[in-house]
Image 1 (spheres, helix red, strand yellow):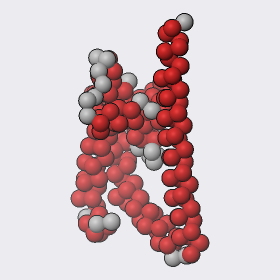
Image 2: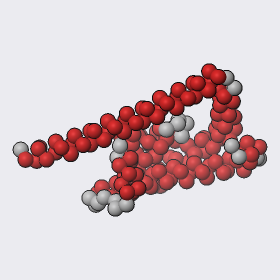
Image 3: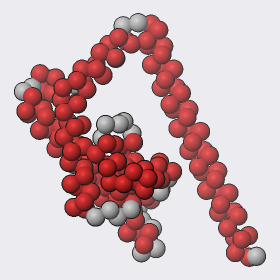
Image 4: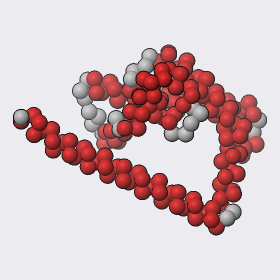
Length: 179
């Protein structure tokens, strides 16, 4: 972690982290809106990186964010900033749902402030303490390696299943149209 974040004045660190999370959340929201606008125009991106991005936004992870917004309403937006991972799903889901930008932004600001408060006070300290404790022990290092292997394997299995499902759907769709 850069020294300015670890040892800088609170107001500077807090302001920096607020801007960072604000830009990241807005970027995720606008990527979701962009993907939806392509879908509504029945267009597909031409560049490979854009296709991968749209495919990722249309994956089941964004569906969880959309379902949370449908279930709990706009209040899930600021609450999502208190989680890890779910925040991105909700921000992308808000964009995919084309939630009005002013409404989304007003709901997002308290979440950004809460996130910046946590990470400018205890967030990074807790993270560093956990890593130091794990790295100081052979069992901790083995646990970190095992966790990395499990996460990597899970992601690979999920990707293979999604690709197999997409291939199956492409093969089944022509049969359904012929009937």
